[in-house]
Length: 138
Ligand code: 5GP
Ligand code: ZN
Image 1 (tube, rainbow, N blue to C red):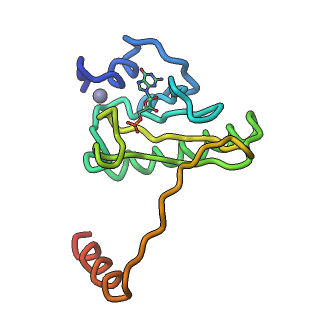
Image 2 (tube, rainbow, N blue to C red):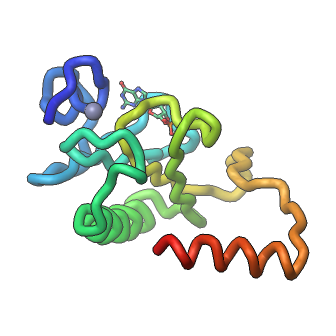
Image 3 (cartoon, rainbow, N blue to C red):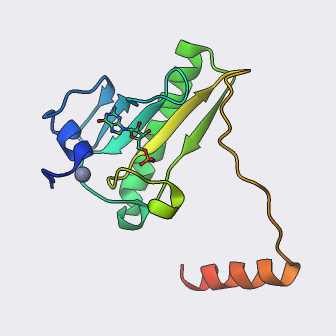
């Protein structure tokens, strides 16, 4: 369902132009307007869903298959040394556009980017309790 106020719905509908790598019935893959590195692309489901919490597993399966195809094409086309997949959900996690998107960020030696987190700590007990709490909700 297209949301007139959503920039990625409008891009998916072709109302706003974008540099498109690929498009099918379910997804559009576009170049990010402010790329972290050369080739930074976004896989966007055409159907509006704000974040991963609104995504169904069938769409998720198709999404990751496509991510694999695009990543391999990037490796061949751009000769990148690595690649980060980033996907932000919610403001606290850095999401600025509230329509689900998967970032594919090719990485190059000396590109100056830092997409990693600061390692933290958890006790064995805390890890075990947390794992159990999540498992119970699956
Ligand atoms: P987020 O912070 O929500 O994970 O990422 C949003 C991304 O969308 C950013 O990397 C930003 O550069 C990109 N972006 C925002 N508006 C547009 C747009 O109109 N066109 C394209 N191609 N990318 C956009
Ligand atoms: Zn949308």
